[in-house]
Length: 149
View 1 (cartoon, one colour):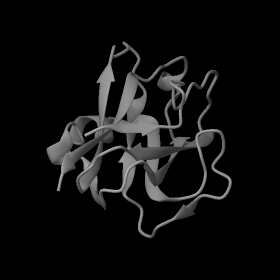
View 2 (cartoon, helix red, strand yellow):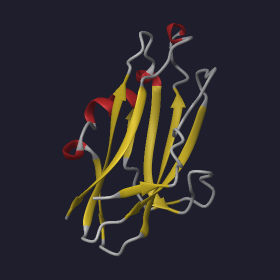
View 3 (spheres, rainbow, N blue to C red):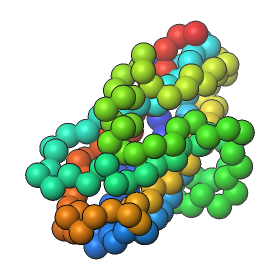
């Protein structure tokens, strides 16, 4: 199933010199080109694990809704309950494929239609120990996958 997004290939997050308590957010709009009804799920994959990995101290929240775009979350309206809340480490280790992904979101067959916008918020936990100074996170791919419903 063919999904696209409005990121233009730019990474969701690139953060430098982060300190405990820092936070940010990014929205991304997903479009389906499927000619049949689909169910979409979100999962993560990490690569290149660093030696001083701090993903246990990066808290993330994922919501689905409408409005907003990759350029700005202005106008984003959540659809209801939070879809995921926990650490980045937990997300990439428990939400690893379609079967374990967050969702599903049912989408009708009416391409191309902007199907949904996701807002991902992150916070570098204020209680992170001094040992996290100079640490990095793995490169994480957020993957949206559609399968026929």
